[in-house]
Image 1 (cartoon, rainbow, N blue to C red):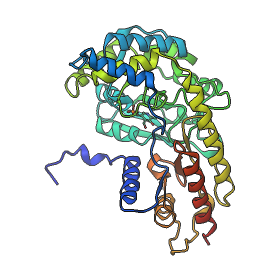
Image 2 (tube, rainbow, N blue to C red):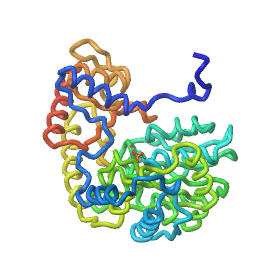
Image 3 (tube, rainbow, N blue to C red):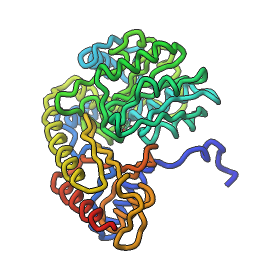
Length: 400
Ligand SMILES: Cc1ncc(COP(=O)(O)O)c(C=O)c1O
């Protein structure tokens, strides 16, 4: 329809949200569907954070705030970046937005001109390429492989960079693979970036606190201080603090970039929710002891899912370092036929057949830019996970 913008035709709706909605619709229609599509913790927001929000309402913090965040939250973010990441920022270098999503979007809107390229390792979080397209830039996808644990190599990064590259988007631990880069692995990438001074780094540290087996989280400006002046360190409270609905994300970086992002936000949404900002102050400044407790649960679930999926002939399921996703390959199932006659020609057909024939909702790998795979979110109960994996086992065993 010509009324709609040409930009809109460059992007697609979020496939992860589509899968979650479809699973919900089927459940509402009475089908016994287990949803492994959603990218959010099933834990409730901790009580101390909720109480801080109630106090904020009672204290009348219900009005507009500074466009990109209250001073108390910006200070809490600076304290967190020093405490957890060894990075020094002042509040003027910090931007707070309505979720990590808005922060990344603001940064791309504030910096991309037509033809500017953004290097995105695949598999990627579904929104990166579409946000780049919305902002008028060109996504340049650099495919990783299961052999390197879905991690980009130095050579691959080097090959993807051109004179037009503006940003490199980095995400560790990753959505959708859970892959986390060690200090040594990340240093290999930052060494490449040091040789390309025109490339800026947008690091999405959203899953920083969700990692297992003693994995040490590191972020680019920490591993290579020489990148500090061209790195935007993005993070948020959604995943670690089970606050997806509160919509608070943030970034720290060079002041002129932060000012440009503020300008975009001032003409679009203005400040993020005042009450949520006070809740985020408590999340960052308050007790952090529930994090290891939650991680112990996630690790148990990861091990359960990896073990049950690895028993399936034709599926290869690596054990990731973090986040709450696994990204198994179905290369060994391509070409087989389901009992209802569906030929598994690719991962989208696999995911659709799994939902139709086995009542399990997962997201197909093509949505994340690397096939043939599917993403399982294990942020759900052990009982649901066990039953879902049992159904996937039976579905795959029945393929001929
Ligand atoms: C890698 C990654 N970055 C950013 C986000 C966005 O987080 P938020 O809910 O704070 O907008 C998500 C959410 O799924 C994510 O997985």
